[in-house]
Figure 1: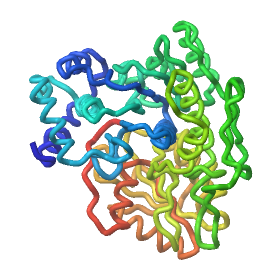
Figure 2 (figure 1 turned 120 degrees about the vertical axis):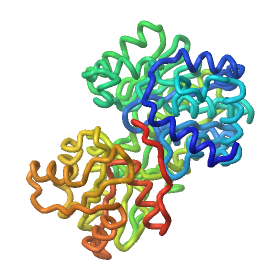
Figure 3 (figure 1 turned 135 degrees about the horizontal axis):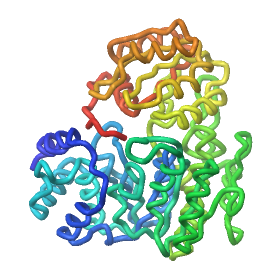
Length: 454
């Protein structure tokens, strides 16, 4: 099988819709020799920040000398980003070989009533980790948790990143319903850690942990972290565990024409990354308590070296172009909170595109007050919201002047022209938008992404 054949087979399956449930996965894994059990796993769910949390945790484990696996979704620029071994994406040839092996050993996998795009990709990740003798894997939940295809692992420890109201068609109409689905990754014998949560979510998570008889560490009660942007990041956990970046090593300063890309020594920008880093610290401490040889110095190195693109990432200068994959109100609020400290006095133009099933009004309500100019466009996806519809939402929110463009490339050029060399363009609303902005800045066509409902 070639990589082109892989794309044709897999991306076509993204149109088959979603099939929540684990029975197909368990049957397929059994035929593959249960590769999901080949190495210890840290399992991370949540609505926002779970990818950054995974990136911090995996970088720390790699700093500890472990051969790591990292499974995340969706990809940004290339499909192979989803499956990483020792910090590097698998090659195209390897990805094709993995899918070919699944097709050979699970004969019904590629039938019309077989496995979905996400199920197949998840199997590929587990198979790669088993074959490459990964010593520790970090696995990000795709959607929800309880019925997500990744929830076949037997985790060493679990983390729940911030939970928000999302995917209500599949996860339920209230925060409590969504939280119950996220809590589905918790398992007996596996300690759990949580980020700060709304009360409705915290109560559900605490109740599930009590049912399972497992500890659930929460910020403010079981662990603390420095939340002030003017101070170096530090974490204090149970049993006097401590991780501090106070020595200044690795802190990225700000020059006249640059923007700080970290917060208190962290490698990822934005105030919200402090909570994600603290959650990663707590998860790693819980894992260390179960025998994983990760020490504070490894965690420090991971916090300073983790890379996770399109999270308030500075991708161009003069004007500054910031890229963020925020695609729900909670994430947009985090971007809005972080923006003033990152851009200073620079005037900001907003470049916005989103999928048609997202809460556009709630996202724009967070962002519009921060920007004098707004530019709407549509990404190359059948699920893209029409820019005219986004503009209509903005007008209902009181923003009469906003521009509409037929393509990301044209919108980006107009936003950069409007910002001027001393301004800033904030691009957000979708990871699909982030991918197309990357391509436009590099003068390349955007890589086609599957129409996943993520």
